[in-house]
Image (tube, rainbow, N blue to C red):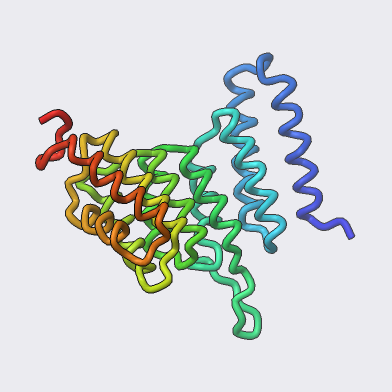
Length: 235
């Protein structure tokens, strides 16, 4: 049976094909109109029922970002998808039926591609609401890619998330992504000033993590010394 979603998908495919063929010939007005249509379709696809349709929406979003469409509509669609099954819940006979961690993880990845302060704020929402390590790992990577750390907010939330999983069986991939993020944030912002970030690195170095992750933490402690106590490189 051909559903509304199938028709919508066909329309999007056609629009994107036209976009690739005729982008150079378009006027400013035509380009704006096509982006508006693209945004509308992305919004509809992201809110459609079912995991498969949301994965299709993510494909269209990736295409939109690749050709420079990082509008608020695209970011809002990613925020919706990144919280699918968390704050946007659909239940059937009391059972949650829209818990799609793979959808949320890809949405978190694409937010890093957008790279704006608004995208960073959406990623911080994900960090506070999410419980799946695979999604959190992608969110941490995207926060590192954006590189914003005003008032140590990003470093602090990363530390809070890692601490949640810092038990006898910690998540090594999440810890490794956090260490990489700390390194990038320090380089982009003249060091790390948040004490909780330093404590987290020390816990990873001496905690229940595999040796390569512990070694990475010890290496990072050594590297951070170049910034000095006041967080400014070279002082």
